[in-house]
Amino acid sequence: MKWIFWFSFFGVLSALFALPLVCNSYTEDRVKVLTAHEANIRELLPKFIADLDRLEKNWPFPKRSRLRNAESLLSQNISFTGKGFGPIKTPSHEALRELFAKFPRGVRTQEDFEKFSADSLIAQIDTAWMEGLNGFDHWNPSTHPRIKLEIERAKQLNNLGRIGAFANMPLPETNELRYFGIVYFVQAMKRSETHKGLVMFRKLAELSYSMDSLIGSMVAVGFLKYEPKLAEFSHAVDYGTVETETALALMRTSYGWPGLLSATWFKGFPKEIEDRMKPDLGICTAAHESANVFIAFSDYFEPRAPMEIDFTKPIAEARRVRERLETLCEVDDFRFVSQRSVASANPLMNHDLHSIDGSDTSGLWPTPNPARIPYVRRAVAAVISTIATPNYMKFYTEEAH
Image 1 (tube, helix red, strand yellow):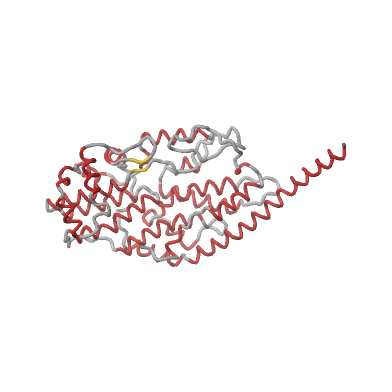
Image 2: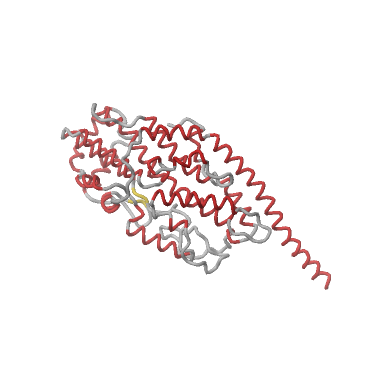
């Protein structure tokens, strides 16, 4: 029976010795794919830089400032989606929803606008609260008291003192915000204050963009693209609307920044655009989008067991760029994502993907966290990186509308 023991022993020993070799070989193959992808991204840089040049000359918002958060005022008047939230049910909000239910395809034509403006529901909608928005310079929805509580809860579930994703974070109902913006404009137009209505519409775009997220950026782009329509419908001639191409440039770069931050790990961040990393050129839209990628990249590639491939250099470069982003944008939201503050009680089991909306309360996942398993973690991360990273640069390879 001894031979069975020794056969099993040497079999297990051989498997353990082969594991690093197999995983390292597979990881190296995947890294080659990722490096080739990074090279393709760099080929799109001239188009990205051209958009930055346009935006630098035609930036649609005031110089960035984060002194006065509009969260409290907007949270009182704009509904949130997510567990534990629901539509605000005041007579004004009910009238707003009833009004827009009559225009399921939106207010798209001059005829639509005239019918919309003549609707009796317009007078039942209270937009006086919006005047207060002029006193704020940014909007950070994550400072909503209930959301802050859920973030703290989620941070402690995995004993890491952080969360790994914003995917379940309650979000403001941006359609409702847009509805209020259009109604405010119509009410202002009826008072012969069309210019004031357009200024408020731009303010809503500014506050949406200041959320420093891809969602907020797309909402802002939607406002900017619709603004010329309102000017056209109301025959406003004394207001400088944003050109469509500028709005599209903002859309493309809003995707492009997280694309560059999420797909330039192995060859390093492009030096030719380091000096363009400015809040007033949109870099902060990458704050939330790139945070999760950085966590995954560092968790899977930074720890090193004997014989594991050394990724010290790309990790150091990624951290340098990440820290610069945090300093430039002065946003605390992603610090509780990218930094650990509580020692892990069970390094093999703790996961980062705990929900912000309170839907998971298990604390630990029933399966080991692959990020904690030497050798395997490299291969897993390489696979995830090649198949799960969004194509942020897609608008530079196809016509954007």
